[in-house]
Image 1 (tube, rainbow, N blue to C red):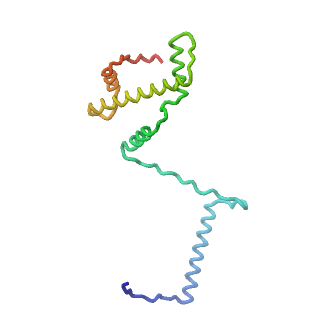
Image 2: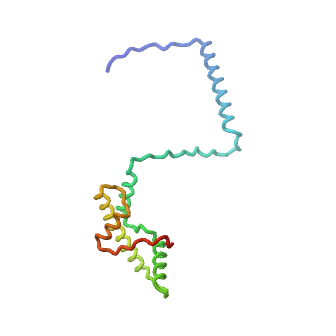
Length: 164
């Protein structure tokens, strides 16, 4: 171990120690007064102050990082993406429009229909994304979806003009 030079500590005389400690006490006293006025009125005995609420700072992410995180999350999950209740209501509404008689649906039938619909939509969006990438774009556009449906040989029905 290397040797280091030790220096002697300087001692203060009794008078200077008293004077400095008194000035420190005055400073502490004034600080306590200021804090007391900032705190407001004294609370009742046994009252506990709540800890201060920490405000969360906004987290900034790189462009596209959140989208990739979301993609990984949905690829890992095995749950259905469309809420079941909304899908059931939509199916019932469509079946009512198709015919005058009321149709009854079994729960398993609706689940099978929802899984098939979601599988179709996911495949459609995957192919649409490939068309957008082929065109040199990242953004999916309606013309990509139209091209995919045309290539697949599906009948394309143009959207009606604001019927709903």
